[in-house]
Image (cartoon, rainbow, N blue to C red; front, top):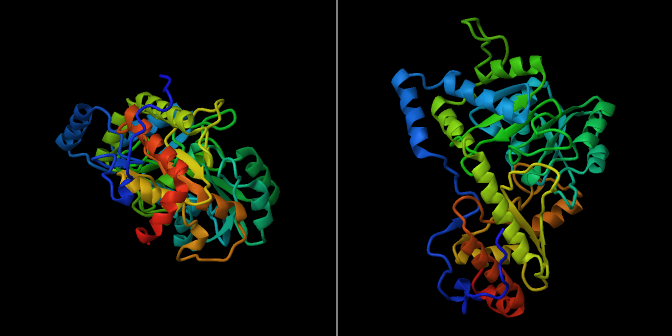
Length: 402
């Protein structure tokens, strides 16, 4: 990786939020969609339209499922219309009821998928290093109404999968994972997609790998896979037989699968760009007071989809820094603030001190194939400038930001 020299071209004289000109003419997004070879996609889409096979478990969906199984070394892959439906299907197929323990520091769909199935999400605290479920907090939340545990591989970092499995086994609970961030990431000894009863991936447009909109469930349980396939298609087992279980339409269409097959061919390129971007951010921000980067463990495979930092400053908070960066057209995002337990329809009083602390501090920065080295240098220069001048900026911000 190219070594960047400190102090080059300290950019701005005036921040945009204080009346200056934005540093970037076009917005830089945290998750602008990655797109593979457009001609390859168009060719696949044309074939789907020529054959008039647009949905209902067509050849592109089957091909995508087969390739994902091979990549993740998982026995079964069930492509779905989106990850939220995937989470709902898993909860239903596992027969979950009563309460399921989940992290509050997650996208709201993790909890919503349970509530849609009539299950109460019970929020547990997280590990301050990984931002994933803290097994001790999980154990403290178990009651006689608990039927399962849903771990979330936040930022693609694996949960404490082995510890959570020990707890689930000890209490007779079902364990599954929201792996929305974690496609092509690994846990201890194997790829994510092979832990618990099942794992659910998101292929939304903003994810590292996308099918426009979509997701997938992986499992190594033959019976569970068969049940999930029926549930995905209204409960129909196929072959013209009547429904055998409660189901819904959660099928992925052929055009989305065509996009997925196209993007699979470029995964290594996407990952390499993400890796270089992440390392450059860490290099340029490592010595700035009050900034701690969320890093990835080098001995595990990662997609490096997210560049995330915790920000602590005497004069400014993460909301202030986000507003300053967004005025520069740097569309940094405040995942997951507020956390789930503080939002409707939950808004429940929980003692989750680590979740509350991390939610106050966390900010995700733009990365991906649309962000380049010079962009990252400029972003980091702005952040350094803000930290070095935080007291002066704080004196003016209240007049400009609600």
